Length: 408
Image 1 (spheres, rainbow, N blue to C red):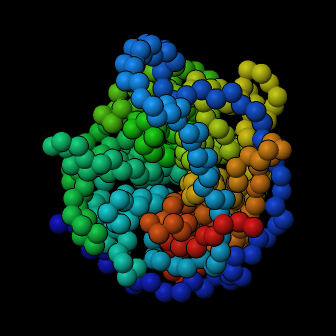
Image 2: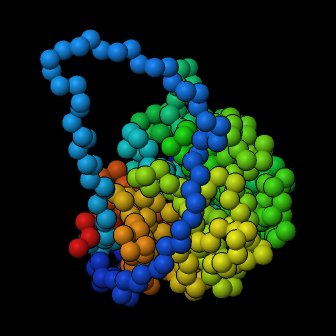
């Protein structure tokens, strides 16, 4: 049975931070979208030709089908109200996981707890992951969900720092919202190099292809990011059991290379993959991810115009971003900013070749670690003021809900 947490009042109460509603704290800016060749997530070998279809019998009716009706793209969304505190008292939270059954789990980095957020805002510990070795930026980090099939139950995947490496594990999920259970831990992917104090990456997500994507930092070994044989400084792509996925470009788990410390993963309505990445001293990045792409670290930081590397689609000074979680709601990217203490919205490319990039809630909630699509079409935010680098207030850290509405 999961143990209850007894460390003070864990129930909902109003935030004491100043909030001014859904007011943008800077004008929207147009950031040039760089044309990046896209490569599909599937293997490059063309499919064999299909057999010729059997002719239909001749009739007097017309045989030419009408042209398909155009499909309207999802709307561009923006915040339409002030953030509402759903839960408080989280300790160095890192990842939000919204389950298909309506349950909500949050990882706590330093405690190694996977916490369930109950409907009334209270919290209960669903599991404490064994073997978590917190320190610096390491600990219990990303969470992901995979539905059961056949005799296999639903599973929660978790990325965590261990004594000798970073690794992905999974736990069978049972119960209903309010009483979720997590079973014994099973290793899935081990041997990802860990940093002494930072650059551990840590975001995990299942893509539209059903494969598991994992971000790894360079673990303080800059040159390893350019080595396709190393798991450091990469986005990895593996099966649900941790094996290198078919079609990977280097015949191992590596999908892309040249990353410093990516911490956000998301797919848009067109199936394109995006990643948010910490820069060093100058520029943070939002990248469109392509199979086998080299994103330049440590040779370049930000857009360099070097044909050997893929430039970011958008970039920010590190003081305005330090990006972590990334989510898509409708057709809009939402990016959590730690040092920047804001949420960035990134609207799709327009016919003019630009992205509309807008900051929201600047300085109102403190450091923002993660964002997620809520079960009701809202945006959920996870503050991160208790991670040792923020200025926590009474009740921190918190899970917030933000209503969204079409832009314009």
